[in-house]
Image (tube, one colour):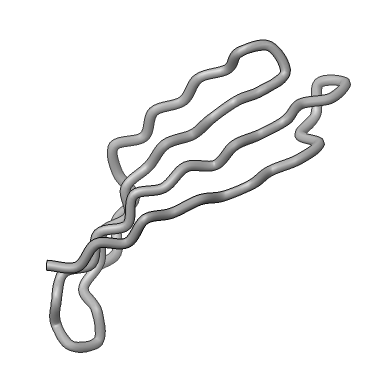
Length: 59
């Protein structure tokens, strides 16, 4: 079953980051681990921009 884990969040001024790890089993039965982060820009108390980045590892 897919799982989101190890969340870490921080805000500095008008920027924020959420770091996470996604784990699952691929179609071939291999374990998949994806480390990623979402980078936010806030404007007037709302999310103005959200970018996501990931790094996939298999094993």
